[in-house]
Image (cartoon, rainbow over all chains, first blue to last red; front, side, top):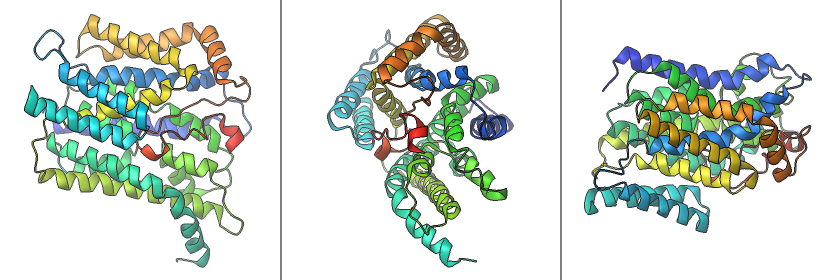
Amino acid sequence: MLMTLPQQLLTIGVVVLATMATRFLPFLLFPAGKQTPPFVRYLGRVLPAAVFGMLVVYCFKGVSVTASPHGLPELIAVLVVVGLHLWKRQMLLSIAAGTVVYMVLLQVVF
Amino acid sequence: MFTESRKKALRAAFPHTVPIMAGFLFLGFTLGILMRTSGLPLWYPMVTSCLVYAGSAEFVTASLLLDAFRPLETFLMILMLNARHLFYGISMLDKYRDVKGFHKFYFIYGLSDETFSVNCSAEIPDGIDREWFYYYVTKLDRLYWFVGCTAGSLAGAVFPFPTEGLDFCMTAMFVVILIEQLSKKENIPSAVIGLAVSLLSLILFGANDFLLPAMLGILLILTVGQKPLDRYFLAASGTKADDSHPTDDSHPTDGSHATDDSHTKGADDVC
């Protein structure tokens, strides 16, 4: 563990605070009938896709393309997820299959 | 007191939550196993599933908890990740207007992607108490998530396989959500901005320090490019600026709704 217990508790507290800010703010800031600022609405339109793009990169931050196995297990498993999801469009299936493929690749093949 | 009207509301609410039950039990279970096998004992998923109750944020939290202590980055990341909830709230202002006291607090506290999608769009039959209907949808969804996470953590203690690579489930989840986003062409520019800025930041600043610059860079580009980006978005999605609510078609914790975008086209139409 890199964090001490108090630091972990504080981290969880920060996560709770940030999450609840997003849930409670509308009820505090925009009592019924008040217009939402245009910039806020714009962010609501474009932010989700940008954030999930960022999160995908975040998931791969530990992958090294220069050291063996050069990110090959990740690449193969992602291709499985993408292919399966475009084909079947079953979220849980795509996640489960991709994870199993990755685990097998990591534990048995590479 | 379990009155007749509460019973009727529960009976009406339950069928709406069945698809969510499947998704929450599966993903909660995965999160529980993941946390346990990465050294976070039972109380972590129990506490986060109760207090945070936001699927993707909890997966990210599990990974943040194993990293160095960076409260500012954590705050900004979770804020951006959950910013979509702002718009659920805005869409529910009217529906929850007459709800008072603890229920009001509870409904807002438990306004996850899935609970929103049901409470926003469900047609509640006449004769069913609306407040209790909302209550049971909120409550059941929270319960599924809690049970899934807790059971996963318990199972993680006796997990019979080597778990190396199990953390890929978070990657797979976000990849799937991104595919869902990209399948709507109005989302392509912002998804590319998110990917490109983060990748650039990762190359420039390295794995430990790339998040904060990436988030600031994304916000900066989205702000500077508001006019063209918004014009493209509105044209591509076929909505007008006035009646368009933000689209969010991601249901990070619920597979069954992953392709259901009924509430994304402008919550005004649905609610």
